[in-house]
Image (cartoon, rainbow, N blue to C red; front, side, top):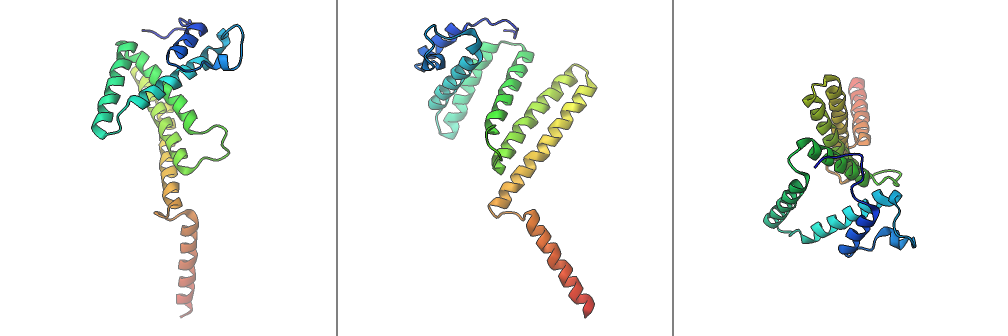
Length: 195
């Protein structure tokens, strides 16, 4: 399988796939009398992807052993569909990670809670790391360096978000606590010097 600029699947075919999965196609909810338009392809594909992910999630057993087996089965099917080209697999994975990062970041939220901020940065670390490897495979040192810099920045943001969450639950001192400790230490030093 290769990734090309052509659209081998029409909007009508995607709508039919949604209907086959017992999901009401988004275009039908909007009341378009002529069915879906080709401009709606990506939105329909997003709906098809969501429906497929819901079905996979519902079919995945929640026991530790069962979950691993079920995830491996879905990965086996995924790999069969993509074929043997590792470049296609990395391209699809990168696209999935970018969608995941956007979903985790809650684009409408003004400020993310620290756990979500850390999760967003962790996903972006993976995106940049995959990009760095792609550049390295192409002997593109400049591209590799740039992607590695992005991965390192995202990794720092991941650690900061995790620390902020620890502060929020009281497991670690925050910046305000550190400043208060420094003020107390400075006050204690001043009293000692007077003695």
